[in-house]
Length: 102
Image 1 (cartoon, rainbow, N blue to C red):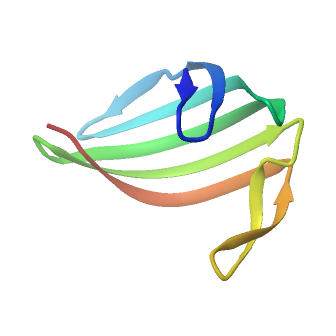
Image 2: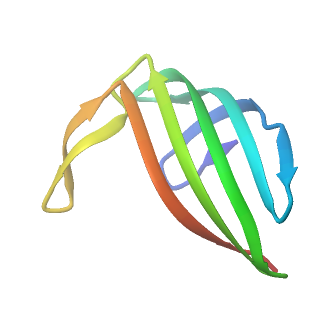
């Protein structure tokens, strides 16, 4: 893949087995990748657990827990006034997301 806005390229491989629990679906995503640019490159690996369900034909609700690590400080660990002021080589997130499709 190539990002024309950031002028970076990369590749990611992942496996994401899913299991249905009635109307709910759970998935465990294991990923690893590489990102390169003129300013440097880095590798990363991560694990994400997702639990969700369809709300309609075009809308899903998902909860997730995600952890990742990279060999460079690529994660925003402190943001002040809309600017990243501190970075880390590890990151974690927990959240809810609505996924719309058509």
